Image 1 (cartoon, helix red, strand yellow):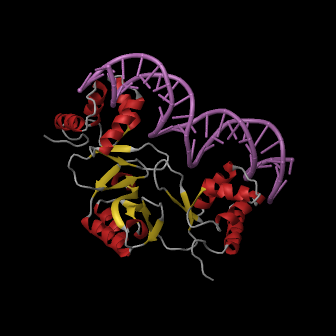
Image 2: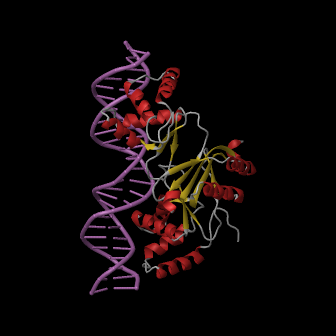
Length: 152
Length: 152
DNA sequence: TTATTTGCAAATGTTTTGCACACAT
DNA sequence: ATGTGTGCAAAACATTTGCAAATAA
């Protein structure tokens, strides 16, 4: 099975999510299930509004508030990561699903988002933190520029 | 002359800014001059609203819109850098004034912002970009955690 | 004179929230 | 039964914008 712009098989996530709800005494509702199922078959990086519109286009009527609330739940539970591209733009969400941490290169022309990871950068960050007696808990590295296609 | 939380002598910036206005055929207005003068004697990282309130407390009445417009001008002209701490929080501004580029460590408890720079990280970033045939134009690296004081 | 700039209030866009009702447990 | 979750509309919030009046060049 190949996947390119699509993520993780939704089936497995469903199960994990249902378990998550059970273990946290959260309610197992039709809305949550539908939102979660669809969130994991969205394109690689999607905004809350995108998901809301896709659901509605597919005749799944859930309120925007519930989409936001459920996405927040998924982020807290580490099912999704949040990516903030610009201060006043909508956040993007991406599945975590055991994938290793990565950073992003964002094309200023076409908006494409490339993921990459670099262990040396991570190490250097930790070293810099230690040097400053700073306890590093998380970080966000975004590189802006032009992707291969847009550069040509 | 020592400076800790305060930046760059405002006098020099005034001159540079007036030159900038002239060279770009922008108008030399009382509001712009006042905003710029005060912006460069603000604490190290300030929000647009902070500056607006400080001005007003000091009986300099300029509209919030003009503060925002002037800050934008200063950012475009590379007099100020913008720092986005969180998607829905106010942006912070910091003087550039020939200082080298740096990244930030942000304390999640007290909100303090430490500046640091690391040439090796910069180099590795460029290398990663090259590897991905990405033309790197700028980046933003934020490290979140606990500062020395808050960790203890 | 005339093109900018200003101030005000209204608009923006994303996300959150209060509240009454519906529903899972 | 009872505590959660949902939907709706309104609020929040930093920032931007339209427009008429003011002003620098």
